[in-house]
Length: 280
Ligand SMILES: C[S@@+](CC[C@H](N)C(=O)[O-])C[C@H]1O[C@@H](n2cnc3c(N)ncnc32)[C@H](O)[C@@H]1O
Image (cartoon, rainbow, N blue to C red):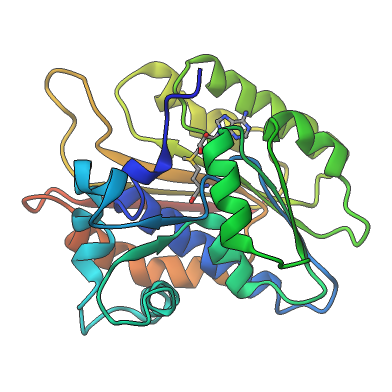
């Protein structure tokens, strides 16, 4: 049952937060000489057209990347991320949005390697096309959580793992916690970033704490709410990332950007960003 298609949501507020964090984290990680292994367990289609196709049916990107596309006062890390998106739109107008694999491909070096997993056959094919003949990356049409353990520990003992499921089924919350737990046992030094939706239901509310409790090192929780909790209890009103072993430079970058993002992406003044950073 694969009804989720990321194209409907590409470039929305959750993508902006996630891809800002991903971009900054990878920038710091490639500042060290040893090769990095990037693992994207739920990679998506790689590149999504905006203003047509799936995205036109929701218009979600208009309240995400659309809100900062022309801003002239962006904090520097956010400006860097927007520059990256602009690089995929050489004609100047916002027509295409790069997903996590393309954000990674823009930052990783020749010596780094990327492993991307995407179960939906159409999105996996689109991802292969988006990455082209880039020999740094492998795309597999298989379960990324199941594959994770086999990729750890990496030969150079440096890895960044993005776990970004659709959470269509409640079992996915437990599956994420189990996969991170097992991955950390195999390779405690890796950086693990788990995206989560802000929803009223318990499975979603407890996920970040469950993930962070697995870590023995530095732990960061980054959350952006774009509106108040819905009275009827339905719908996603924000998103966040629980990150184990984040690179140090991410802290200052996020402190700089999160208040701005809350103002820019919050609806009717209801945007709220929260950020915690706990050292071991
Ligand atoms: C939220 S989207 C990914 C977005 C992408 N990471 C990005 O930031 O651009 C989740 C994707 O995971 C895929 N998917 C669902 N279950 C999966 C699994 N067990 N293994 C790999 N891919 C899966 C879905 O088809 C969907 O494209």
